[in-house]
Length: 240
Ligand code: F6R
Image (cartoon, rainbow, N blue to C red):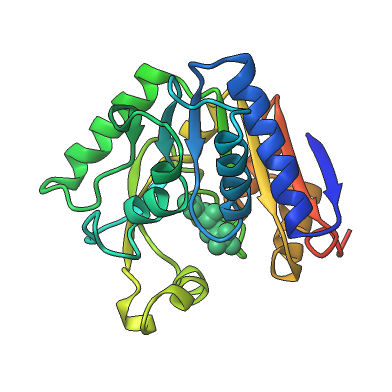
């Protein structure tokens, strides 16, 4: 485990974008595992800037996203499909055929989970980008009695719905379920890069990376990953 300490969100975003662009420059056909939420937005903005300057080319990259809300159509402004297009895909030269996001509106969600796991197995993720939930979740793998394995349907915890309600008109509008890559899926990535910023993440950073490995703190499993990098700012590291 490698921890890169930075001053603030802006430095975190630049450091993460540097790692992602180095991955793409060294291996233009990289499979990138991508995340939504507020943590990676700055990194996406930086990558867009470098793309526009001609410093990085995404034309051969394939992407797989971590998760999606169940029941939100791709054009819903809070769906993760919409988020990814608005914050990244629409501004770079990623081939739309190479974008993979779980379908939260599939008629048979169990079949969709199997299909998505097949996609992940077939591709193999080179670099997985993650945010960290305030309760230690990764993707939408919430604290529980066991670590999840493959793509599955998740009942979101009150803490996660509460944290995400800032994007919706009210708490009632936040979906109660999501489809997420499993913890085992995430651990299969060759490299994992997590970004964490702000005091709200400090408890989870301390518990996940300086406490016991337990499914009650899903991110703690990353202590076992052979190539895991945490880029965190001073506030997120403030309890260490
Ligand atoms: C998003 C995701 C979540 C977020 C986490 C942190 O695709 O899988 O695990 O990374 O909830 O969210 P933010 O970055 O908004 O604090």
